[in-house]
Image (cartoon, rainbow, N blue to C red; front, side, top):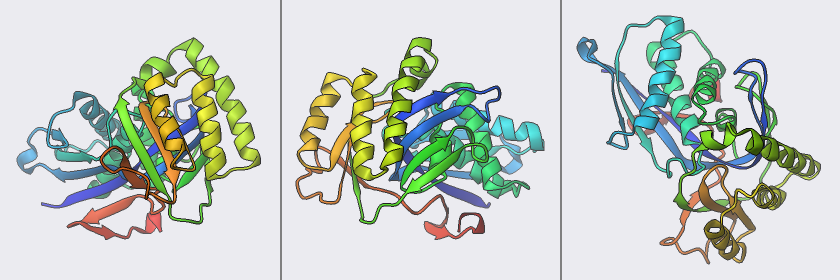
Length: 302
């Protein structure tokens, strides 16, 4: 039985502004974020005898992530009218609900894997649009899908789904490490659907975007991310304390949007305690299809 495996990197947003439009495909966010070499791997295969679709997340159940996967299948099935059911195993190796863009990566890896498995006549960009629609409809995110189809340090300069939104990838010369520590989750939907919060975030986020555009770099990304977290009052005291510690050992630190997670970037991890912090790398390799643990090059991503 053929199985398709797709890896999508996780994404930490440093600052953003909410951009609403008349259609979900044009609705999204602007802002800047980083991709990590940890993320979401989705494995999908057809069920023999068309048994009911079965989903597991990290070898367990997770109703919120299962809803994202099922919504993705539902949207694609409504257009292509396939009758298949599936066994889907999703491995998420970053904290869920803590600002790593796992909802977007979950939907995107699902839509890409389904496209490949069923040989649907659509591009990766179209598969990304399904994932974006899932995020917007469920209120789980606004810009992660667009960014997760890019590499490294990503500046979202136009909001919307892939094919509608636009990104600028900021060049980084050295191998960089992402240092993180999570204290818990934040419900993204509670913030991005609150009118007062939205207005405040968008005003401050737009200001950070203008500043960042003048001199985009890793260090200015960290600087304006921290300013954003403070001025929006999203930063809590416990995360701030971790940030203060990381500031002495790295290029700078801030809070992941939206999650109770501190993150920092550095090219030297000699002072980082791996028992206290998780060490990842800035990810520049793009989305990957895997077979038997090996990367399969796909022309759509070369």
